[in-house]
Length: 150
Image (cartoon, rainbow, N blue to C red; front, side, top):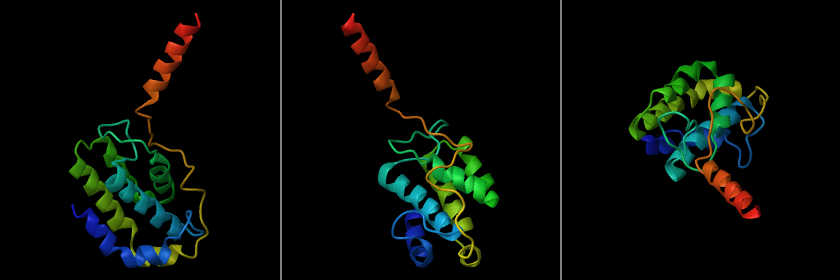
């Protein structure tokens, strides 16, 4: 895609609704923050919001952002659910672009700018999950330490 163009296309709206720090105090600011983080973390770090499927993510857990959007913006559930079928980077980028096109909308954000924030984008459980790709290292280290003890 064109996801880098997302930053140009939505720059004005993002600047209007996204807080300088945190997730903000309105649903509009939470939406902008969550969508922006999902896109930024993909391009900056190669992170995906559910690395238990076909797409392998790196070191950051983004599942909470996607779970918050899934819970609080039901109109985007069909887009987020595509993670279960995605197998390529370009398909994941298309998912993110479709998510931005749907949620970063002038009229919707203006309406949601008056609605107090719901929960937290940083702490929301739901259908999407993250598995630490290095968790097996911890198990191996513990096993080695136990062997040395005996």
